[in-house]
Length: 422
Image (spheres, helix red, strand yellow):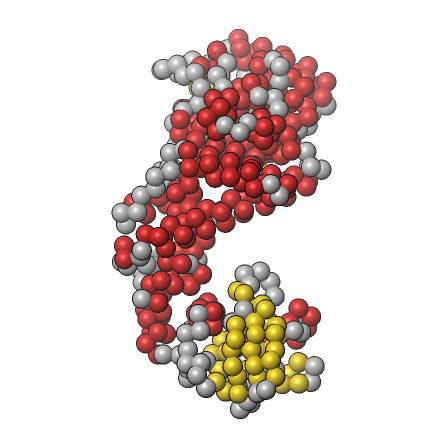
């Protein structure tokens, strides 16, 4: 037995509620179970019940055992002072609040044993996606409703993280955009190194040289620690330029080359290539955040973000290492990854910051306009014959897997509750 199941039982009133009695023997009538609270504090808010002849409105707290109230130290938390009903599976201890017995409803004799057995059997599945054997029976509309919900949930989580960075930068949106974009250019392998680079080389200093692609590359590659050694003439030129800029801007010591990982990466994804692509993007769009918020057409925005890399990096994948085939700009998969994981969340964050829905609509429009991601998580769904048609769908499937399937939060999921209800 777990509290997730008890939340489900209470929320959907999956018990015999005809003639309810509290553990004290008093009668109980439920008018409204309350709003499920997923944050800190009591589990349900704004519930309405009638105990004997008195109607009560307030909070409901749910536990497996009554004594969990004491174990969770709710007696010391003022946010639990307005609890009007304690709903438990097993009543093992009277709980006092302000020297009065807390009204308690015990569920274990009220719930159909077959329902509890069905839930426990569901949890015992060895599949990573517990509902994999039944998921095709879920009505498409309900699956779509859940997917829509988790896409918004994922965007809001990313937006919250961006707004945290914005606060640290004293509401400098261009700096926050720079940091968000930099993290994305590192993918998972070099993400931390790119974040450190963006912190050591603030955007306010980089922006002063963005009119020159050579100076932009000198600052980025120099501060990243890539300019040691004599590989070729262009590297020597950048090193000389960086030496001047480093002294001018009084930059911190460059990162060590040990921060950067090349192993198991294709040359097109080497951090050297990704740095060149980032340099090209900010050189072509020095006020990137302004571009994102002012450009209403998604098609136009995509065109402006597709920046050509410098001549040197079109034919090199590292200093002194020539490409087998020249490349003008980042690949389509990398570009769409940038749109999904940086541009859309930035617009969602701005929507949250300003309260203007149009930016969230534009964020969602970007996700719907790009191809779906292909990774180990989306492939798990593909095996169940659930395929993404856009970046919107793939983001939803990723969030559904990470936030619900992996954590076995089936009863917080529309799909899971549909299966249990069937």
